[in-house]
Length: 259
Ligand SMILES: Cc1cc2nc3c(=O)[nH]c(=O)nc-3n(C[C@H](O)[C@H](O)[C@H](O)COP(=O)(O)O)c2cc1C
Image 1 (cartoon, rainbow, N blue to C red):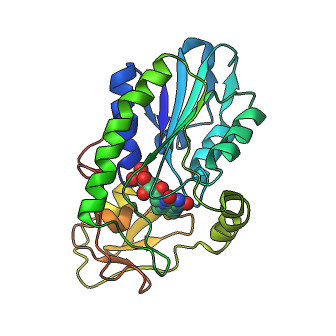
Image 2 (tube, protein in one colour):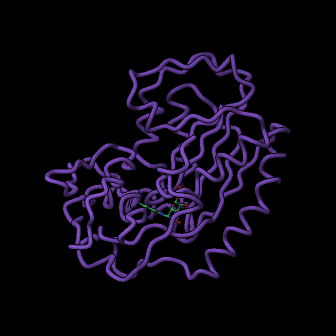
């Protein structure tokens, strides 16, 4: 079983390729979070994988919530792995995720990291990769996939991480600050909005609803940027910080391409 979350398609791509390679089923975490809290019997699985983007040098809070809210039974003997996708580096995301799993009596055997195109734009200085830079990252990730798939099949204990500089500072100090100041108050639509409602459909947290045809954000945003990047008119902006920065998502829109 592979549990995954993706805002802009990078992690969905990695999850799908690994699911094909390993013959494992996929489950989209936001869908599971909308159901009643679940109990999951690990004895029924050869392995359990988690695939997710790195948000502020940690797992997205909705993935952490999913792990906390699920009742995990009997994990001994089940191989557990996690694959992170990030734009640059993951800090201590894996260590934080490992401790969270330990609290649920799950032991993380292997961690993998794929550097993929950048998606976060809501801070000054943050921008998308150039098309060539993005294409190169995707090629590198494709090459990495078979090594990762083989390692999982061989149940290797492995720490394949891209920590970057000052990882402790980023995960322990900057991440909490990011989540403390992070808000969806800055999102708005320009007059180009044609009220198509795609943002409402795509929001993984169902944080957007249309009021008189215009999207409104309801304060439980994780800043995945799915609404911004998928808007067919590029009519969703965040303060002045996203203006002119362009859009990106991997492959087809998440709306056209559901599992
Ligand atoms: C809210 C947010 C925070 C992010 N934080 C980081 C980060 O700490 N380090 C990093 O290298 N990339 C960061 N990124 C970039 C994403 O991790 C990266 O683009 C990822 O592949 C996106 O996956 P997705 O397309 O499956 O959503 C962040 C992106 C978002 C939206």
